Image 1: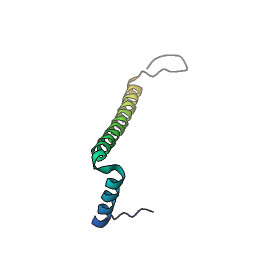
Image 2: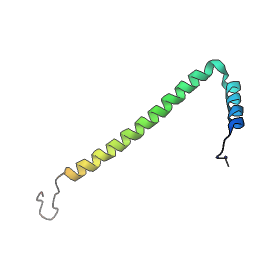
Image 3: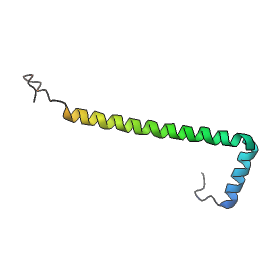
Image 4: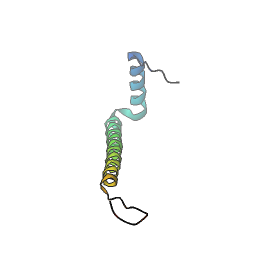
Length: 73
């Protein structure tokens, strides 16, 4: 669907279209908000992986309860 090889002429056309749509004054604002969005997304992914690791560690360290006689091992 979308070609993997984007050359210089295609990049120039894309940049031109972005400038036409957003304008030169709004382009820094768009870039800043896009960067913040990507940063928050990465932050949420790392926070989720840290939470999973902590859950695995706490599951390994928690005492095992024998359900047959209720003793803790």
